[in-house]
Amino acid sequence: MNGTDVSFGTLSLKTIVVHTGTYFVMGLLAVVFLDYAHMFAQAEYRVFMRQLNDPFVAAGPLFQPIRGFLFAVAFFPIRQTLFGMKRGWGVIWLLLVVLGVLSTFGPSPGSIEGLIYTNRPIRLQLVALPEVFIQSLLLSSILYYWVNHPTNRKLSWSMYILFGISVVASILGVALIY
Image (tube, rainbow, N blue to C red; front, side, top):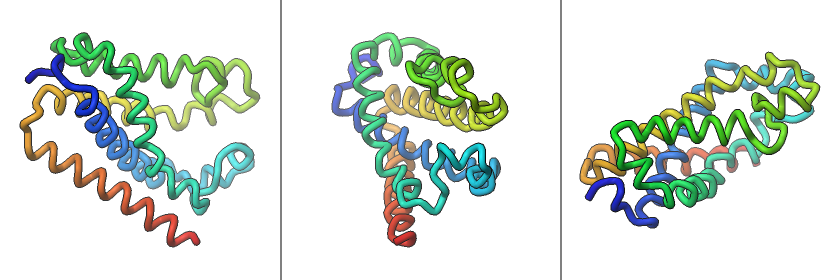
């Protein structure tokens, strides 16, 4: 089987697992290295970002399977292009960055609309872009490889374990807050 033969169910499952796992890892790294606790406590952020001790923040990874499924819905009709070409991971990444980050329909921070229509300082809008760019790159490259190498047991096990850790850690985080 190559990537062009992947079923919707398989693509959905793999996209959900990879997206949730990479989202969780990049979120943890951002909390530590971008000091989100301190940053989100600043007046400029406090008005639109929940604090890290908010139960919804802890529950964030639990909602990511929905986003992963929606990505799979978008990827499936063009799977032959995305997973059938040599550098399809780059096409996936380009689509995610251009359509999902920079060219959103609403004024999301870091997007063209956000830069034009919000009064948030540019530095506040751009600070999280490295996290988003790296996470989308990881999602694109890991998903591309996994779809095109479905019998790679080490990758499969690693991704399912990371997904499980993401879900369990999120549930524990919510439980600790309450």
